[in-house]
Length: 525
Ligand code: C2O
Ligand code: CU
Image (tube, rainbow, N blue to C red; front, side, top):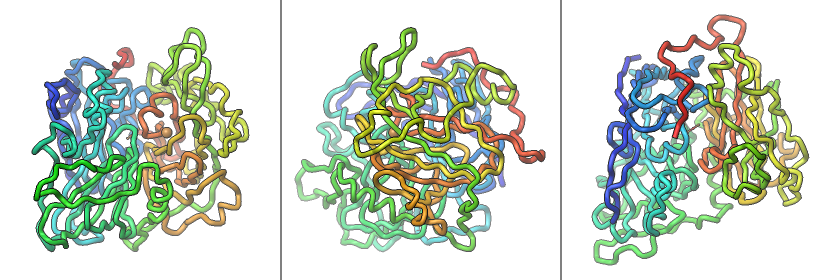
């Protein structure tokens, strides 16, 4: 593979959108979204991140396994401390296994709202895609509403619902005239659209009027082609779809909903509209997700672990609880009762030094090792959830896993409180989604697992009142963050940390850290 070098300068940049005057947001190199990085499987990317913004920052390579090198992974206080203002950190990203569409984003506080961009990994030199297309195009979807929320600036109603495609708003906003994102395609040609959901909190349906979509990839792995007229895509996910421009010349809406455009400007050039399932249409959303399969070809085989040596069940919930005196409680609510998010009734509290550094250097007192393999009490998604309505423990727990364990994690949604589906995301690994279902998980569901060609992804849509089972082989030692990719959930405690121990042999151990790791003394925004 080749060596690629990039300079990232993190800084405050004024941008203008809709009827707004300039607004200052954090960017990399002054761009929103940032610029796309393209590499090939086998390449190594060096990124020198220089922070001239006012807050500490980190950059994460979403979906890159970072084999035995968690030092470049990026989540703040998990694998590193934030890069302080006026300093640099050189990250090394080795693309050994990855091939497909991934992305990079900031991983400190809510800064990923404006700091994110595609990471496209093409097949290794001399290798081919397992499908054909004429041209490719990347689409990054985001929600500007959350840029406001992250900046704590309010904003008018239009802004509050302004979704963006590649940084541009749709055309149903009063001030979007001529600014709406568009892409010209040529009749008869087939396009590969690489879609990245970089939004903070909303799942989205996607479709193109009158056009079929063929899903061929997801989270940097090839999929068995799936013919559909809509996608359900959740924050953190990427999907590669083929679209053939086979309709009469004209204009066709490309729509991400919850918000279907009903008051589009009406003139003779009005594009053809598409009807997507409603935002609350759980069955259409679920029906799309359960049809996904990995390609499982000779060149891209599925290798699903079948001898499970570690079985973990994780209840995913929302708790209403008193905030302990002398603590700063995350999540909405006042000082007496607030809303926490938890995994197995533990609401994750980040330490002020990095867990990876504490683990690697044997520093005590930074985290506990008592994250339970099972929920502390029986849960029942049907509503009898009083047990999980109890206060979650706000602590820093890690889950230790032995090298080469074959791990199964069963996530159970508890549908408590303001429940939503949860895009559960794991760093350091891709995993196989062997099963997804409604209701409480039961042992009889195991007989229905797909161990032949399940999706191979880094983010799974856990139904709020259902379950999802994932499998992976723990062959990447290190400290790996696992969290809901809804920022409102992750930042309020719906997180866990996996420590995968070293193996016995040398190439099974975490590599030593680089010399320029940011010091653990600065606090982020
Ligand atoms: Cu895109 Cu920790 O994630
Ligand atoms: Cu969540």
